[in-house]
Image (cartoon, rainbow, N blue to C red; front, side, top):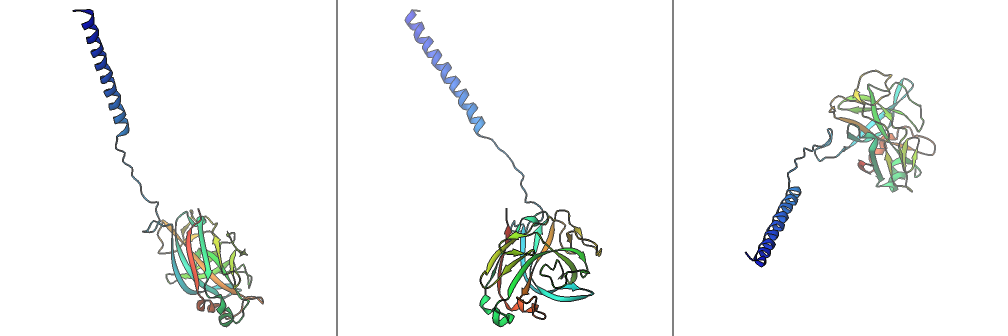
Length: 245
């Protein structure tokens, strides 16, 4: 066999080796780029059917506060929020007063303001202590599923136009927000222990959820007008509840 023929065969052989290596490399890359990965993802417990951490329901129910041994009218429970357990300290409530020009007629005072607070249950039954007529009314008795619960005001809320733990709405400032700060992750079933100050879970609320309440009170320059707190129900508000994170 001539040297020329041997050289030609050697070239063909080297060409086949290179093609073979390329095919192996291409196959390797193909295997690296194609594969099946199965993930098992589920929503955290306590979320609503739409995947939300907060489920807001508008209400219009009077609530009271303790004054000595009596319970006096303190305002209107304007909403209740089912919270996925552990999310309460991320709640953000945007509020707007839709008919502030009616304040003079409805509230008998054009300078009246509306104070909006976030309340959480601490024990079953009516509240046994309060702060007289203070703006900070840190205890309120509210009703849920025909049972009275003593509520504590989330006093350390943040947001716009916050005073004494509440959002202030007026004819000049008709909208604002309030952000919760209290951790609900350790909440247990409510009891009748009136010494309790910790967030509890009322009867009828899922163990994966807790509940929070939005209360609105009337305040005039002279103080809280006696006998007018139910007039809040004659005013119109808009609320939007979502996560602040």
